Amino acid sequence: KALRALWQRRFGKPPIDEREKARQVRFLQARGFALSAIFKLIRQAAETANG
Image 1 (cartoon, rainbow, N blue to C red):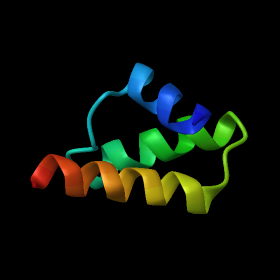
Image 2: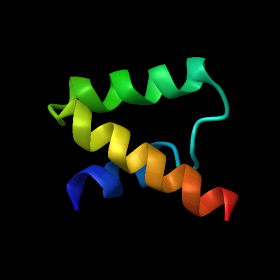
Image 3: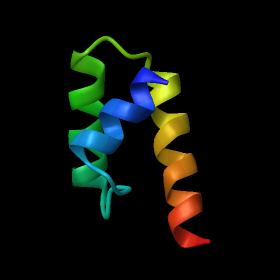
């Protein structure tokens, strides 16, 4: 998945606060990814990181 690969390369970990989350979302949106897909990815990454 291109979205996950790019996110992993650029950030590698879920956002620690809302400011960081907004930064990640803006970065991925600027590269043409759908907002719903971005939120899904970040949510899944956070769930995985938190167990």
